[in-house]
Length: 321
Image (tube, rainbow, N blue to C red; front, side, top):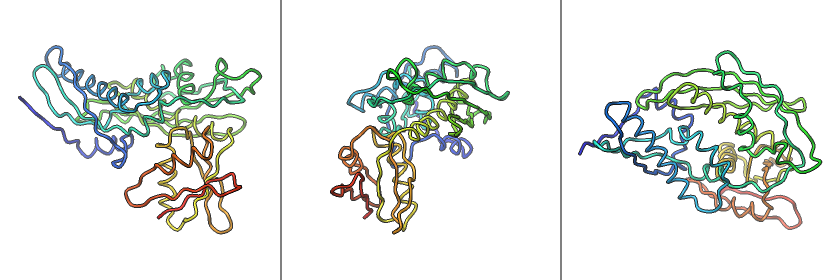
């Protein structure tokens, strides 16, 4: 039996780091697929199918309810979710791979959104530059991406909801083939505009061909910009971070909430109190008690959180120890 493990060259590892899960949050999940045919093309097709199987195994590990539309949107970007992988075994009849999947981020991505919005989004002009694939100007994938990111479109909004016109500008950059993975990498810069304000985000995408990589990068950036737009329009919950000597911990807390707390769509610095306490605004449909419980469940390798609800205050106090 032939066994083989791939080590990525420095160039490939650097590109994949942009989309791979962090070491603290990544969970290895295995997938297998049969090789149908002969030659490198058949083997590469089987490796990609095995990565898809690993993604499905990761979804099965999540438990709880899953939003079908959000899951379909995640599957369209499966090459991004499975971009950090190793080939464990190549046999004459099949392959076995191990994929690093950020289960907390995946659970957040596919969890149902239950909060209704008093406004709806109407997609206006989409400006795509010449470096982008022509298919990126098609409106249907943009609408799917907005919906998957939790922004209510006209058909899903409440009756009498406010209408928000949303413009989009996309700039593309082809990064080229990623060695040892048989993938193509692309990067985009996206700017969403509404009510005189811009919501900017960068996205990185990987796929077996350039149009797929550009589409994955667009979807990555769209999801990031959309949650910021959503956060700006929704009433946030306020966290008061009591110990702020180490700004890096505050930033790590922001990232953990953004990627690991199901029900929290976005988090940003809301203000700084006179005593130096940092206020973080969390956009979520969760109540304060439920949010405090989920914050208490966050784990960090070198510190812990103390989460309390001060009596009579519409806020949550967070301390490090």
